[in-house]
Image 1 (cartoon, helix red, strand yellow):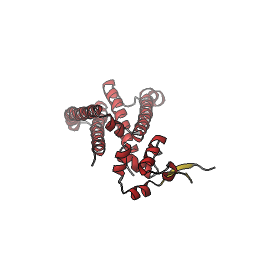
Image 2 (cartoon, chains in turn brown, green):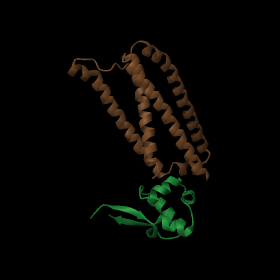
Image 3 (cartoon, chains in turn blue, brown):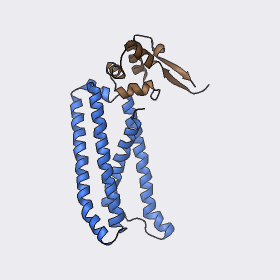
Image 4 (cartoon, chains in turn red, cyan):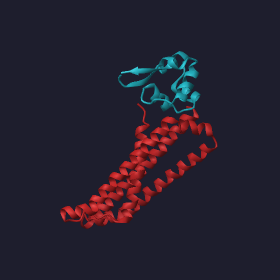
Length: 161
Length: 70
């Protein structure tokens, strides 16, 4: 296996790592929003969730940070080798990134529409409050959804036949 | 006139030269999946990359790539 192939696999695994770690983070945030903030669970179950989730969020955040640091190191390594960098970021990879950015943009727009519907329209139409979504949960959720949709779609577009 | 795609004889030329997708990728400076995508008709390469590939095989561009009227 040549160096291009090795680095390409390394990048793919790194991106998968970031994807999984941020996916777990998003899942934990959603559970926190639904069950702890909006009280979908009661009693002992709620107390257990409230105790477990912050620790689990911290672990997944550290995992994301770990993979991001490795990705930054990978990019740094490529700086010293322009031929390898241009081979790894070839025209198909660049196109896949562009498609991924577009997908992430539309995902964000779609989620903002959902948040808007949940916030104001739900109240106006059904005369009932929607899911309570405080800013400290909404901002990381939005950011992580952008990362998830971008990386997920990049890995999808660049997958082999 | 129907929609035309870019067909190729990459596999045939690779077999003639006895080179793998990985070797070809290294020779033209791209990743192996990119060669795989081109070979399967899932990615249309730029003129520059297509010319580089033809040069590796030592044949004119039209012998490797052709208009595929489907």
